Image (cartoon, rainbow, N blue to C red; front, side):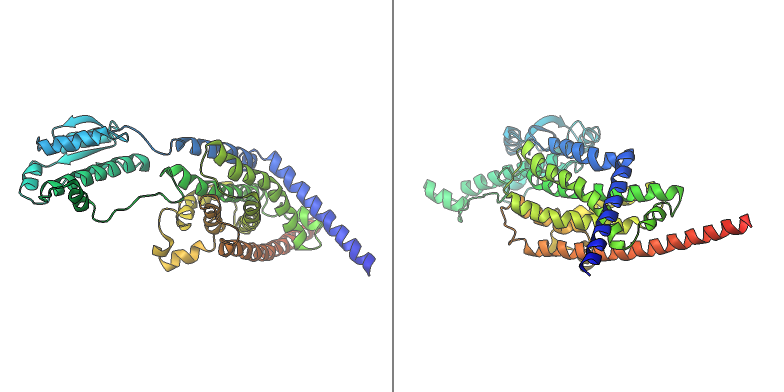
Length: 411
């Protein structure tokens, strides 16, 4: 009994090693898969991180449309230009002229002062300063909008003090700021997009390149023969777990190295905020990589052509990033989209990694995301086994039919 069990285990390990070697050989010989598995994760995060290295932008060129030509409008412009983030680069006579400069990308926005700007403030009525920004780049939009808001707040304070009739500096202080507060950026001391955006992108790169590579392998083999990939495997098949295990082992060995590079080395190369511990990181990456592998293997069964997976995965990259609650609060998402988000490994992978990396959380603090990834791993593993079993049955049936047709032709 023990000898029989030992032989079965040895045979299973031998079959898994055969499938692993076959998958590794196919990965290395396919240039497209090799680029997606190695070159893209190696270079793409470096370019993306380099763009946000400075975290904030300085001296963003802005056009000024001042139809008021008053003391207060000039004071607003001087304070706005004095900020390190913005620069009053051009003065225009109309909104159309300023819009033309924005269209040519000479400036990234403009301020508009109406003719009655100072008249309204002198009448103790509300005046308006219009801020127009180019939304194609969030860094420039943030610099222009926040600077204009800060200058407006400072001028409001000065107007409020001048009209309060106070006699002491303490009274002016209480009038301008009845409730004192200190603004401290939590988990992002620089207030930049790099420290908040890059961790999300790094986790998404792991998932998307895995899906692309696995789908590309499936599409390549099925373009020549829909059953070419499974017929050779079926000759060594004595259990679908060996096939799924051998394939997934090949992908896991590659991405164990790739994920370590993306999550450990890249953030430190660009001095982004990193508070995680190695133990918690690798504990999170284990179920995340496995869930992505089985998720990709499950979806690869519907891929018929190489182009299909490229279009599908690239199209879903931005929605997957939104599903993680990065740029839109999770609580404000419709229930349908929140339900769909729970099916995607990157949803819990991004949330868990950001809390470990940026917020200094422990593995116990992300227990929900950690358990969700293991549940996804188990579910997608079982579904993948069922799908592969069905594919193998179809492949064998097709092989038997072809063999029968050949015998009839020979007779």
